[in-house]
Image 1: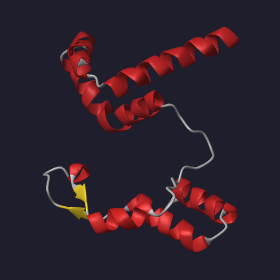
Image 2: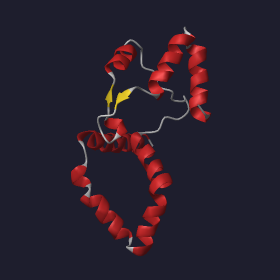
Image 3: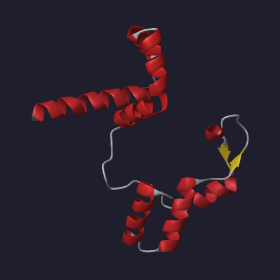
Length: 132
């Protein structure tokens, strides 16, 4: 563990009643035993014996108590750090309207959860403007 995860772990240890349980929860959060039944590892089935074991644990998530960003802000940060250079290339060669077209054409592939994320962020922004 490094930086924010390490800091969050230290915070959790100081608040925890039993370090052993916390350690088991951290292990559960970081890895699992899977059946290689899908080409995408994130969609593989978790082994039944491991699932039975972790079902006994309370879930813990190592998130620092610093700033927890909205999902839309995390997506924006991911785009900036991972896709930004590619977006720049498209903008300089194809134009900003091509990027807009790609985004607009993708609207039909938005899941209900993603639509809820959009609506939640829009209402949050409206609420922030109302307070100001």
